[in-house]
Length: 296
Image 1 (cartoon, helix red, strand yellow):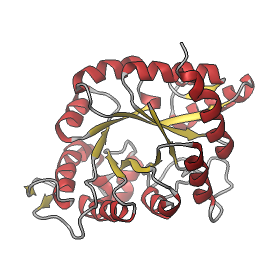
Image 2 (cartoon, one colour):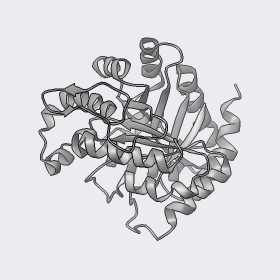
Image 3 (cartoon, helix red, strand yellow):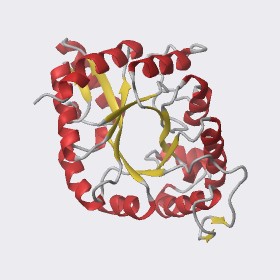
């Protein structure tokens, strides 16, 4: 299992972002041996949210040889041509390190802001992925109901990039992943190890399976972990008792047990997302949780 980190794009505590803060976070992750930097996409959210693609671009020069991943970007809302243009640029300036994760997004508010019908998100997503491949030079010309693409945009990306598709694990979502994607991006707060194991059987051996939005706060203090679970549950509209078995909040031993369950189910990449104290949490995860993850 390889580990990546989400950029701290959400302003949880109202303090905002200082200049250079994202870069120092990435440097810490690089020094600690994380394999990837990830950024998610929202236009509006319960808390202020930095633009993911701009944030990724801002840390390219400080990311060493780590992969850069969108987990996910929203081609239906950004438009496949505009997203392809940005993705190609990121791939070029990073030397071919981009993984382009895409999905429909789950926020009706994002769709209202973009002026796109929320109920059209699924057929639009299917077409947008095919259009993305055309624009990036890895697919044939395409003419659909919502989008048409007849040629690659210039300049072309350096190395692809592979397109991973986000899905919470529904039967229709997994069929889309298998049909259109180069990898599956599952969501930790929407997918249990048991659900991953069942889904993994449908995708076949060797198909990349990653777990994004793995909210993380390693602590031995039970009141602190419960407070984080409750706040996270309120933000995500999920029961805290459900989340405690899916995300990494609590003592290192419990977090490691959760990781082992996901690894046993077939997950090969995990992107952690510290809820607070990001530099400290990156260190604690690598020094306390990872070594325990491989012990029975």
